[in-house]
Image: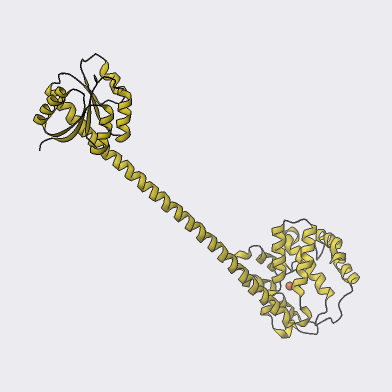
Length: 356
Ligand SMILES: [Fe+2]
Ligand SMILES: [Fe+2]
């Protein structure tokens, strides 16, 4: 297959144009477009998009640097050959530095012209193909970036929705459990609002001890749910007006464990479950269900125990119709400091009790 190409020849001398045209016609299927000035050449390149540009360097007033720059503006891959009247040593390198592909001396030897033109046309095709690939990659990258941004936005939205969903679910659970705890209290009209009042007392003690807000919140939630396990104890025991038998007492003592077992699957409750389990432990180890002692009982559970006991003494019960007077209840707490109750918690309680 004959070599093909469209060549722009910028040359002000017709005899040169005739000579080059004649040589090229023997070398392959080349189309030659001739222009006599650099400006006309640049306009012509815009219309014809040639594979190669040859410039005669001897054109009077020719600014070769400006011409190369203008041609490259039209076609950044433009391959340029400069035709010299006289070849001066080292000149080829100087032209290469300003972006010229090849220099040829006049008169041009056919072999030199053949080699330079074929190489130049191939180089132009390669550069153009490369530019197309780079452009394609850039476009793809842009599209990918756009998709990434969209995806990131969707993930962000979904995460936000999930968090809201989780929060909704969590508060729905909390409300359900709270209602359940209140329903259990309602079985015995004497214990109405017991958990709510215990929560108020315990929070006051915890705040006096300057506990972190999130720990105070865990204590408050544990107070609301601390007697949830009473759901498993029959009315005959729970509402009994007379003293309980030892067997009935054993039943009552199960409520912290039953409560913890009900709440355990609700992982979002975190520390609440252990506080529910430990709220009847005594500081000296005589409490239930595990007989824990001193610091082995969670601080929150020691606080709830004081608040719970004080509230129980200050309220009427099925087995004790008249509640203890405030002074009597406080005295009872003081008397049991160091045995049933943690003395540090009792001290804090005594500081806040007047404001309860
Ligand atoms: Fe309890
Ligand atoms: Fe209680």
